[in-house]
Image 1 (spheres, each protein chain N blue to C red):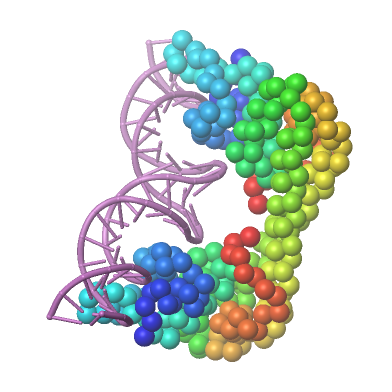
Image 2 (cartoon, rainbow over the protein chains, first blue to last red):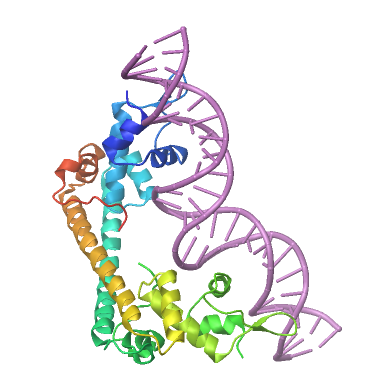
Length: 142
Length: 142
DNA sequence: CTACACCCTCTAGCTACTGAAGGTTCAAGC
DNA sequence: GCTTGAACCTTCAGTAGCTAGAGGGTGTAG
């Protein structure tokens, strides 16, 4: 039986995060000590490790919820889990492509900056005039 | 003079986003019509275009605030703007490296999935057992 | 002068946590 | 048995960067 702090240490999670996962129903409500403190068993440790690992691979909590559900039903088809992973892979590849374009543009900005006054700073100039860009970067963020 | 809707269309921004930028002080309070509706001039159009463009390049609103400030003072040194852009470039490159590692892992998961039952799904198996991973992916998110 | 699209403010919600306030429980040492 | 201090509890608020909705007012074309 683990306290929440011990579980946190073992999984590299913050205590608050564990409580948060419980709150949103990603982890089951654990047993409690006589005084009302959470006590965890190995099954909960495994579940949290699964969640954390999936988060590290960039899966959303919603995706993880689905994966956990699949994991809980060993006789279900694997297709769904595969689809979720493929979706995630696609997203990662899209983000990479987008970042690649940004990198190109930023490199160009930085390299062309001569280090004088801001009045003729290439960085600011490029930001001011989108038409100077070589790449399309329509979507924001990512 | 542009209405907020026209400005939104010209810059590819949502109306609410423009009001949000005003609220957090990224855009100045514009003039108003007799009835109290916002009316924008070209200088505000330029400023918003700058903001949007910087956002598309992944700059945070805080970084953009600094860039705008530099842009407003043409006699300041360019060094700061350059530093901000370099910081951004570095961040982009770090994110790319991270995504590259994730991509590798996800690809492996997906390729090894045979499409049977979830009980022997490679995707779920890898998520369950971190030790199967070839890469370190310590930080969460991306 | 009447539609109707557009605008207004205000509030709440999203993701995935994180931090803090104010109080209780646990385990070790004496 | 008692004290101490770390760890635990709940609840609320905040982060970034928007986005959506309610409930109402404005502007303009026909």
